[in-house]
Structure formats: structure tokens, C-alpha cells
Image (cartoon, rainbow, N blue to C red; front, side):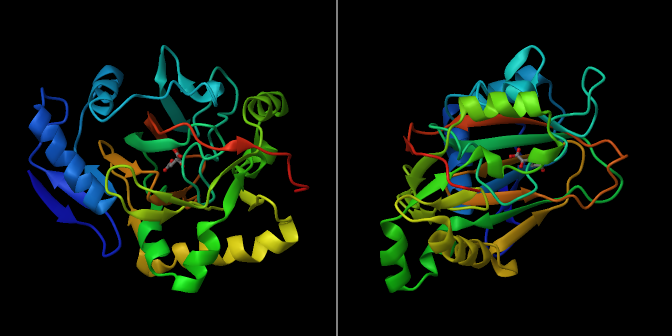
Length: 286
Ligand SMILES: O=C(O)CCC(=O)C(=O)O
């Protein structure tokens, strides 16, 4: 197995491993080690079925069944989310604008995702890229004073700040709001495997618990700009057959709308469950 770095801030491509094969425990641990070091790993040229995608993902931990976003599950496979602009059952896809702001997966739930594994099955001729940033590096590069400030903050996540809300079916959106009330999580978290501290704030953070929107907004804005500077980012240009695995505890990502929406784009995602976290709070006046 060979790891080839993809960017200065994060990311490595892994070559020489067949992820659809019968991998040994030590091979899985070797992959996990590279993943923890680089935060994001890419396998190229993968041909796999939904059961193979699920089987590989499960080797790294328990999978989410996506009960928090039930409308986007792949029929017959609750462990797979569809992220696509292709109509579903004759209706516009609810996920056609998924991920258009910087976020970490399932931050608006009581069980934020540990990691995600996104597989590209169809892509537009140009664009449809995804960008990732390193939140451990972003934390590390704050001044000690600023670290001291944010260490005590709790970031409130609000499903109303997911992307494309106005274009989603209002009834389905109401279900999502019911399932996912605003929730506060620590703004700085320690990675359970690497022990590294990382910022946990995003464009889906409405405010900091105990502070109002006006007080919180400039700090959220600063932290997001700081985290997503070009030098802290890897931009993935998809090919069909790519499996990109990211650690949601140490990265954020954004799915760019840099493609012709008339061209099909289709992705399948497994989500590895993180630890239960957070406390429900009253909604902010958005
Ligand atoms: O479609 C993509 O590139 C990423 C989708 C996304 O943001 C997600 O699955 O959380």
C-alpha cells in the first residue's frame, strides 16, 4: 500500500489496496493510520456495489442508518445516502443542493458523524468538485489567547442553516426540523483516536450557546474564514469510481455548485457514527 499526499494541508491517495477484497485486520489498521494522519483518504478506480460499500465502511466502525435525514436514503439500503441532482420518483431530488456550505456531517444531530465515505457513480463533464479543510490545523494555528476563548464555547448547530433549504420540499423540511432541534456541541473537540484538538464550528453554526447571534456571528465568520483559507484546503476533482473518506472530527467540506445542473451527478455516502454529544437548546432568531 502506497500513500501519496494530495495537498499540504490534508489528504492522501491510497494505492495498491483492493477495498472490495477480503482485507485483514492489519490492513484495515494500516489504512486507519494513514487516514488519521492525513484526515482524508482517496481510493481511485473502485468498482463496487452498495453491499461492498457498506461492508468496507463497517470495518471502521458502526454505520449510521440516516434516520436524521430519512428522505435521502438509497432504497433498500438505509446505510447509504444518495447525494444527487437526479430526480427521484419523478420529484426533484432533495439532495440536489446538499453540502453547498462548509460543514461537518450530521453536526445538527445528537450523534455527529465520525467519518463519511462518498463514492462517485456519475459526474458532470466538468466541475462538481468538493473542497475539504483541516480543522485540526485551523485550531493549531490560532493564537493561544484565541484558543483560550474558543475552548469554552459551545457551537449551536441549526438544520435551518443546511444548504438549499428554500429549494427543499417544505413538508420534508418540517420533518427534518422535528427530528433535529438546534443542538450545542463543544466548539473544540479532541479526536478520540489521535488525541489532536480540532475546531468544531461551521457555516451551519447559528451562534454560541449563552451568546446572541450578533455577538457570535463575527467570531463564527472569522473562524470559518480562518479554517477555509486556500492554504488549509484540498480540492477534490471527482472521477467515476472515486471513494473519498473524510474524518468529520477533524475536517469540514463543501460541495461546490461549479457544474451544469442539467448534467447528472450521483454519489453514495456511508456515515460512520460518532459519539453521542450535545444538548438541545432553544432556536436562535435566524
Ligand atoms: O456531494 C458532495 O460532494 C458532498 C456532499 C456532502 O456535502 C455530504 O455528503 O455531506
